[in-house]
Image (tube, rainbow, N blue to C red; front, top):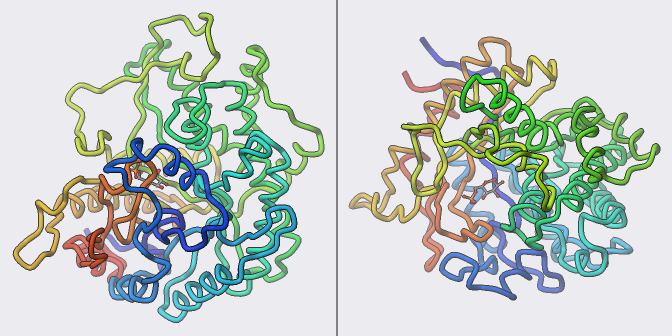
Length: 464
Ligand code: BG6
């Protein structure tokens, strides 16, 4: 059967400012600049975000390569710590304005729709030190001011906006599992941060609606909707999966689409004295200002079982006390990244959105396969022969296509990522791009998967 995708389907990829641009404005540090300065040994090969994939200097040729790959859209982010000179007044850095203007104009000129995200884990570190970062509602206000500047400066040309990328990662990495700054384990703070991120998103949407008069601009949020599967059908395992789902997905999905937090989750937090501080006015904003559309990042499934230790045990309250991680015997793995490969989940996500959230429009905003030491797959001409990535995309797109045939309201597919880029503490360990990047020479070469993707995007169809 011919696997054709809907008309005007978005084909492209996603990156972020901090992972691609390089540190072009040193006036302020974001949390990752700072963390690297403090503890370079915590980053793979001690490589920090200073150069990344050099997008600041090479965006024209990078975008030409993406044009060559038939991209009709690209998602990146505007960095708060680069655009804003003074966080309190919102005064802007003129070089950053010039850079983002040139990037946006070049994308449009090349037929690549600019999709802009405002927050990709990269809060300015000063706002942590001064106010406690996302723990503080003052920071929510300052984020709205940053968003205002972005809409004023670029909203005439950028029609597609997102407030956050994977906000749950800020909560989990920074406040529960210690893999992002400030590396705490504090359930109460974690829940306040989750609430404040939701509030910030709703307030930015409110501002966007007030500022945008033309009907062709949209705003949404990008969530990593890792679906949760119970180890068995036992009531205990199913309950564990249900609670994991509340914390990892519905904590952001419900307020974003329905304008409210799941009641059951709120009750559970209350019982444990870890409910966030909120006001009636804030909850009314969350209720009213929901998203126009949704970005869904999907990499791997989440499998859980009932916890070995009772959830009511003493110790620091953290959501993980309600479930234990479960490894499916014989599961298919990407051993380099340590993630299970389970393409059917993309179909399950699609059907679950339809069942629980109606007809909300959404797209796959990230999906991808991180492989280390990809040079070993280079052929004699220097092209990375990444058959595994082509298979990975084929399988996921096949399930996505099936879901669309069954009525899923999905309008696009973005791979993580166009060009191998820097990643948080993993730095350059895992490569995800359709285009390889030699980090010593900054020479960029299209991989075999890039040529495959080009054809798919051009035909709007999977090869037969
Ligand atoms: C996503 C993030 O979760 O995964 C990206 O949005 C990140 O920023 C990507 O780079 C891949 O994860 P990692 O840790 O392998 O780079």
